[in-house]
Length: 427
Ligand code: AMP
Ligand code: GLY
Image 1 (cartoon, helix red, strand yellow):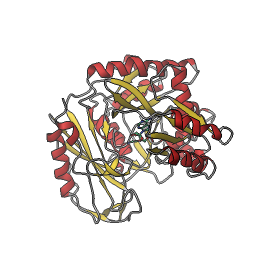
Image 2 (tube, protein in one colour):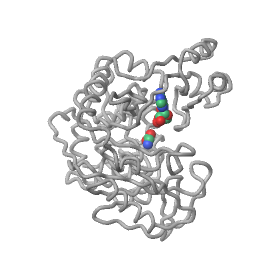
Image 3 (tube, protein in one colour):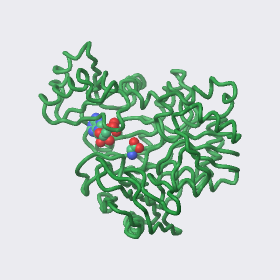
Image 4 (tube, helix red, strand yellow):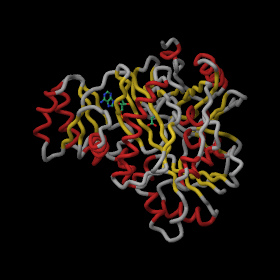
């Protein structure tokens, strides 16, 4: 089978690495890909949101399945584009159509969806310029801190958590009237702050049945001890010690089943991954957000723990036979440590030559933002690598990732040396 992966990050490298192990794979293409994906298949220099270029590539290379990594092409309707096109309509796309992608593309939609289907989540109210005057009273009805979210996609920056009520009211105006987050903030969701510990659960669905994939914990902030600016994610651990079997069972009953049933009831034919961001509030799960794709760097710990053939599972999604497939997960622990460019998540430099990349039996260096320049691999993004390792304990796994992190060199290299620390002595 010929497969195309859309995207260019560590998530896509992890997908490419896993699909390249499938016996059913003939040719793998990644658009646009990076220096890492080039080791698993053929990179094609087109943007994942240039649908016409994607169409030509699919036609030219006889692609038989398309796996969409990031949310952008999904929210923009790449799956719908395929279904409406005479040439493309029978080629399966893994990733929801525009309607399903709204679970991530609109926080207001996803909150309404959760309330319609009884999925536990924080109490909220949505505001636009038409009811902005009611915002102050709603803020006063909540306990601090206040959580304000731009409705639309805001490159991961659209959430504000504010302690002071007056400041929260000012920011509400700033978002709606002064377009602080552009049109993404025309509607703002204000919600209750959830106290607890965060984790993510991933689901693969063919629109009828589903498989729950391993859970993961992400480390979002740039600084050691979870301090400083928010990033795309500085590391991840899977499984999550505070999400034991009983907790995951609760997630399945209270969140996964109502979500899948809700999609069916609303006539949303969802085929792809659902990333459920959760708070574990004293043992009770509550949804923070849905994403319509896998997480990055969570994919780099979740996918390597799947022992089954990923292409076979994706074919199950495409043909709605996922219920016939078995998914096997290793009990080993996977950790990933993200290496970033100096300055990230603010301005950073690119094109720094990288040396010292080593893979071992227990560790794999996934490329997040790299490019090939002549003979060299160079940095080409804020997040540069995600080094995934296996172990029987978190310390063992993460120790292997740190050792490789040390051996890699490029100017401005930085990583958090405390990934997993909070979990090592859990329970
Ligand atoms: P999001 O962009 O929706 O992932 O939100 C960014 C981060 O804000 C989340 O990962 C949480 O850490 C935090 N967050 C969002 N909503 C809430 C909430 N209702 N209560 C507590 N923390 C939240
Ligand atoms: N690591 C968080 C995300 O992929 O959104």
